[in-house]
Amino acid sequence: MACPAARNWGAKMPNGKTLSLIAGTTVCNARCDFCISKTTPFQGMGPKLDQINRERLEHACGLAKKLGIQTVLITSKGEPTIYPEHISTYLLHVQKHKFSSVELQTNAILFGTKAEQYDKLLAQWHADGLGLIAISIVHYEGEKNRSIYTKINPYMDLPAIIAKLHGFGYKVRLSCTLVRGYVDSIDEARRMIQFAIQNKVEQLTLRRMEAVDVSENEDVSSWTRSHMLAPETLAALRSHLDENGKLVGEFFYGARLYEYGESSQNVCLTTGLTDKILTDDVRQLIFFPSGRIITDWRYDSGKEGELVQISGIKTEG
Ligand code: SF4
Image (tube, rainbow, N blue to C red; front, side, top):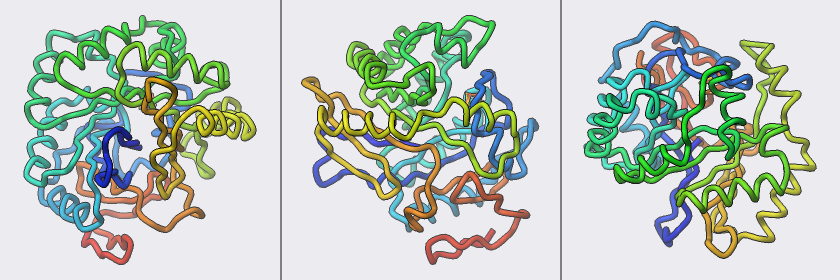
């Protein structure tokens, strides 16, 4: 979930709604024990690459505009950067719609391991309108990230990757999943924020880990449940941010946006999934290469071509 920057927005504060464009397949080069992608419906996706249905993509962009969506987030059910051709196609397509922010969610591993290929792509993507890269992490220490993301293989030099992305002109968001044994206390959160400040990271998201009620993968959901932060820890973290940060935005699905401490570091405290009880407003549209459009990762939209009702707006499937 995108959590927009807080600084200097004034009247232009984003509404937090996102058009998520799914790139690639279910294939990922990481091995996260909590991978929520494995627990939510696959929406017809598998390891085989689908061509992007451009007609439906155009429809999704038009629908996003009608819903007041300002942010496009290229993401995946696996790792999007494994399929750079999808990212390039999406970027070229959304250009004409002039969204306020176009972002990519990634584990960024390939930016380190295949630098020669990806440096060229990063330069091109920036020229094509990609403005922010959100890197999924669980900690400020490489060893901790390795234990979740790459296991037996080495993890990248995160500060060097952040510096490289800044060099290409990107803003960087660190999207840190809160996991017991990792960033799981106020002290750890403060160290994570300090890391963001030291590396001039424009945005830091602290994301509560979620387990779905009906899971496609019980092993992953069970690991997730046993490593979630306790409600009282989350409440203490929120109080700490309230007391030490200036609240500059609050979104209808529960995310809270702060300028933290003397350096006014942008910090967003958020959830991974939308609580349907909290809102019946649309937090996001999710577009799949096949042309399928949904509003929540947890619910299967059914067969292709189904009529989907979104906030009173009908979209022909
Ligand atoms: S990087 Fe994302 S998609 Fe890949 S295993 Fe981790 S959580 Fe799943």
